[in-house]
Length: 383
Image 1 (cartoon, rainbow, N blue to C red):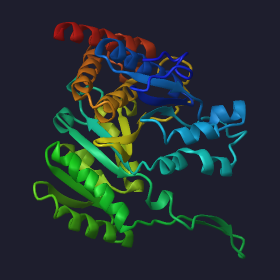
Image 2 (image 1 turned 90 degrees about the vertical axis):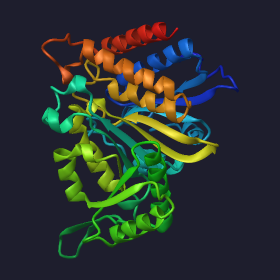
Image 3 (image 1 turned 30 degrees about the vertical axis):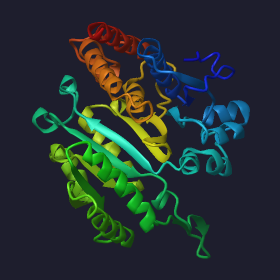
Image 4 (image 1 turned 180 degrees about the horizontal axis):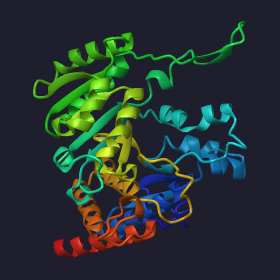
């Protein structure tokens, strides 16, 4: 594995190529710890990877005039995966022009990379039962995943915009649009994932009032005929939101559109006790059999109020690396090893968002140290 300092000039043709985009705010801090953990796997488990670190986001734009360099944006289509931190900040006084956001922002990046499937696992750890706002008997043993269609729907539909009316009022318009192809593609992804889990897909829509959701439900039902071993049920999005809080254990794979998935996956973070715990992966077309173009990032945002203080929870970034170990590197045993190490670290120390009176509160780096210590111990036991 090439070091961060030399990654841009030294490459290995047999290695996986990853671009690291730390982004804004705490993204830089948590991504640095995920990279440290990846370096452990390179040194101890033989993963061969070329890392290339690049700037992206609001801070990069205001410092350099580039949201992301155009050549870097183009190179996102040439690498195996991207490790991303966070985007955004408190730069209202000097905002990024709308045309720059449209051309190089996260939505455009996802679209350009063809990242149609967003995967957000939500798993309740017994270790964190005290910090979940849900009663232990409700949150215990929750293990679900939200599959969100990522490059269609209301975030991309046209027409959109704000117009001035003759009356003096203004009107804001966004358009919810889905095609059969987009729905079938994400449904196939969800059914295939369910086949590796408990075999149950819950498709979420609002087909009682939205034509786009009527199409969604009809096409998902049709596609399900190809997956006789997978159970399928349907829920309206409001009912799903309620049951995520009252009966979360009933869910295995939740399949939904871009807007509903954005909201539901963040709401589901309450089950874990902290948004900082949640990883995510976004997948596009296959680069080679079984390996898709991928983009890994924690679910949380840039948290400018705590940026630079060394108190951010790196679990979401580190567990996003676990998704990469399985999804890109095809090392499921290493993914399980890392998940176990995070659980052990949580039994020994916490960042302040997960504080427990019986455990020491550690910094962002301090928690990653605990994860690496647990990896050392587990690797020694395996060896």
